[in-house]
Each structure stands twice: as structure tokens, then as C-alpha cells.
Length: 522
Image (tube, rainbow, N blue to C red; front, side):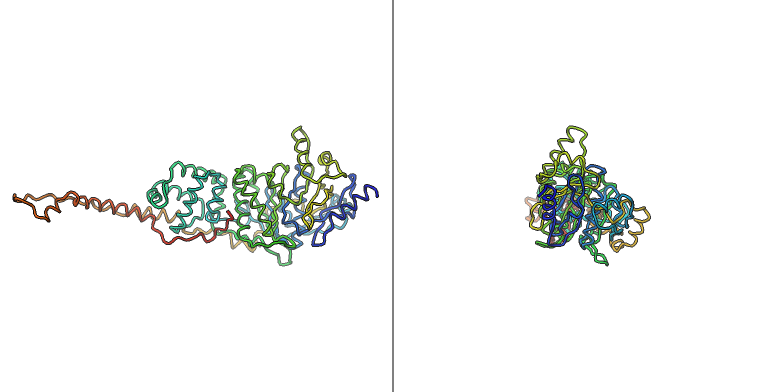
């Protein structure tokens, strides 16, 4: 058997699956595509996460489109993070051209233009259905990790959440949280210390600065009501295809803190909301995170650990996560080790550091006698990639140089009018677009402070002037009591108690309750 025949046999055996699967390309041997030797992906293992990596212009976005289209056809809902703004074309059918005709001649099959059923979402001011979450839903631990707080500061955040539970103060947005920080450091300090212990003013000040930093990245538009329900991401269209939710975050590249905040909260919400699914034939939802380095570049070690925890656990809920980035080294090693499907497009070697990166990237893939991976990784053409994945038994497949099939949807962005038209037909628009301004901690505390300020101060108790009395040899028992200095102090103490009671009224609350919608796993 020749080397080519052995190669073809290896790929056919390695990429044929019993369960439902789809084709992403054909194998390439000695730089020549081998038509009929298909590289398939089993749906069963797509909850084991994945990586799409490669330099700018090598075809990562088109690979993402191919995977998204195939999942949608298989009735698997998809959530795509569109950071560069070039994924909106998924919502429109593509058109054929000479390059597509040539590609199809190598990969086989035929080109059938088709669009996907799409919902455009946003967490900023981009056009789309607005996604929001309340501070309460984050919970104290997750919020503390996002803010990068130490143990002492995290304890204060937990105290604030406990106080709000006890006093029935809803924490909906950052304005509520800031008001609580100001209150416990000023007017409510005595009340807090009496019930929960002392709190350092410097600690609350540090937390406040961290929250303001998050605000400066535009987080105010994300926190609030109505909260987005993750079930609305797991929808099937009327024709049986999985809905593709395109989250338009083109203004997030200079606000990585907000983007990582949203991503971690979404993953935690998915994990907390979805039931355990065990071994599914296909995933319940697949997320594609484009420009994934934004999730990690400003994350603290504690936050990275939380992300790793979610990635490890969420696959049991039937959710797969795919990170799309230029360099595999952008992904922390612990997370990279959890990624079953790897699609590695070309990397460019312009410097010694680039060559070192390529060598490290090559070490992430199974060894093969058919390719010099280090060298070939710099020579891959556009729309070509090294592929390896997990088979239905969880065993890595052979590394294969793959020529990828072209997407069926438009390989270009939609116009503003096309996006507006799709949003206007959304079934979610009326549900989420109108912001709800419920009475929350900010309004309740302000109201109590105003009531306390408007109440007239009680008149001071005046001590009566002693009336001269005839001199007597002795005093009666009653006179001795009235003359006693301790008795006179009672009047002054009564006034003080009334004043403190007015301040105490600011903290009036009822029975303790748990947060009704806190679904964080942390």
C-alpha cells in the first residue's frame, strides 16, 4: 500500500461516524485535495467545545459560517458573537462566483445558496434586541470576580447582597449597587455595623471605584430589566432549523471588561438554568466567541479560574463553546486543554517570536507522519486548515490538512436597512426592547432619606426652673425624686432616642428572603 493509499484509508476510517454528522471539507495530500475523502464532524461531540485559530485573512470567519449553517440545518440553535461586524451575512443567501465554483470542484457536491433564520441581539447601543441582566442575578461572588476584588472586599459585597435580601431592596442596576455602597458608608453605617459588623470606609471606596471603572466601559446599558431569558437562545424556527442568534458587539473591542463580564454571566446563567442532559446525540446550544482574546486579556486569575470551571462543567448541560482567535496562545492553557475540535488556519512567521509561536501551536496537535506541521502551517492557503476532533468515543481523530467547503450564506455584511428589516420582524423585540424602571434599592433608599430629612426635629425637652420654696427642714420623697439628676437626664435621653429612631426608620425591612432569580453556579 502506497503512502497515499494509507493516508486515504486513515482519513476515511478516522472521519466516518455512525451518528448524525456533517461535512466541512476534504482531505489534502501532498498539497492536492483528494475529492471524495471527506472530513466530517459528528454532532455528538460538539458539546466538547472547540477552537478556530489563524492569522487575519486566512478564512476563520468563513469556517465559523460553515459550522453555524451546518448546526442550524441539524436543528441545533447557535449563538454567535459578532465583534468585527462581518457575520451578519449569515442571515442572507450567498451568491456563486468563480472562486466558489473552483472550490466546489475540489471539495465535491454542489453550491446551494441559503440563509439561516437569524435574531440580532445587542448588549450595547448597536441595533438589535436588547439583552440585560440584573445585579441580583450576578450574585456576590461572580460580581466580585468580575470587579477583581480581594477577599475582604468580596466579603463586603456579600454583606450588601445579604442586607438587600433582608430589607427587600431589589438590586437591579449599577445605580442601585452604587447607592448601597454610599449608604453603608454614610447614613446607614451605624445600622449596618449594629446588625452585620464594622465596614471600613476605604473598602467601600475601593469597591466604588471598581464599579465606576466598569460603568465607564458602558456597563449601565447591560444591567437592568427586563432580564434576558436564556430559553430564548434555544429556539427552533418554523421550518425546523436551529435559530442563529447573532450578538452584535462591534463596539466591544475597546471595552473588554464589559465583554468578559457579559460572557461569564451568560455562561453562568446557562449552567444554572439548564438541566443536566448527560450523553446527548447533539448539543442543545453552541456558542461561537469571535475575537476570544477579549474575554481573557483583562481577566484576573480568579476570573480565569471561574471561566475554566464553567467550560469544564457546562458541556454536561449540552452546551458547546467555540473560541475563535488569531493565535491559540490567546487561550489559557487550562481552557485550551478542554477543546475537542481544533481548526487551525495559517499562521504567519515574520519574526523569531512568530516562529516560536508556530512551533508551540504545532505541539497542540496530534503527531503525524504525513505533514511537517511547523512548516505547512505557514503555507496553508485561504480556506484551508489543519483539523482534528473527537470521535464518538471521545478519541482524537488523525490530524488532516483540509480544504474547507464554502458557506451557503452571504460572505459579506448586510446593509443597515437589511438588518433593520430583520430586527423589525423579530418575535423577541417587543418582549425586551422596552426597559422596565422598577422601584429598586436606589429609589427606596432615596425615598427614606427624603422622609427622614423632611420630618421636623423634636423640640428639645426644657428643664423646668425650680420655684423657690419655703425653707423646710427636709424634703419629701417625691421632691427628692424630681430633684434627682438622673431623673432630669431622662428627658434629654428621650429626645436623643427619638432622633436615632428617625434614622433607624431608613432601614425598616421585613422578613429575610432569598434572591428569586439568582442562578449563578458560583
